[in-house]
Length: 90
Image 1 (cartoon, rainbow, N blue to C red):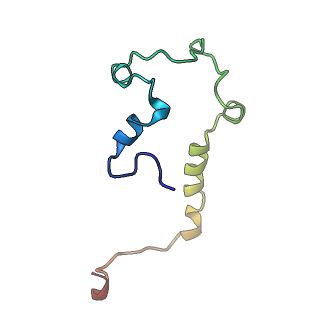
Image 2: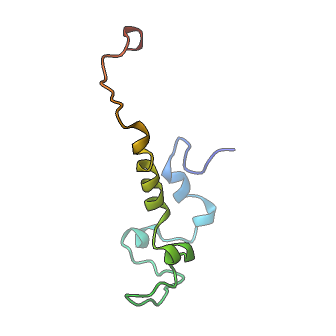
Image 3: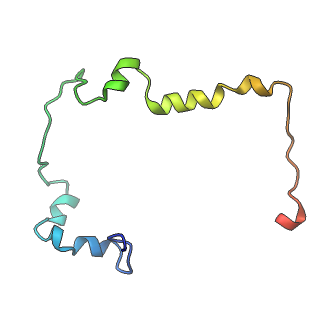
């Protein structure tokens, strides 16, 4: 099995696939394709924001970043000065 578009013809394979036969790629490139669903949202609407983000106010990416720095104190007093790699790794 091979992923669509990963063959020798690249993206053309996707463009020419029977599934997309009725799709107008030129309209899409001009950003003139009408979306099948257009949600009506206000400036402060959170209806489409995942519940876990609304509850704690922290996104998973923020949480991961804070984890990177949470163990900084574990290495207090240690330092590292990089040198040249061994010659057999160059």
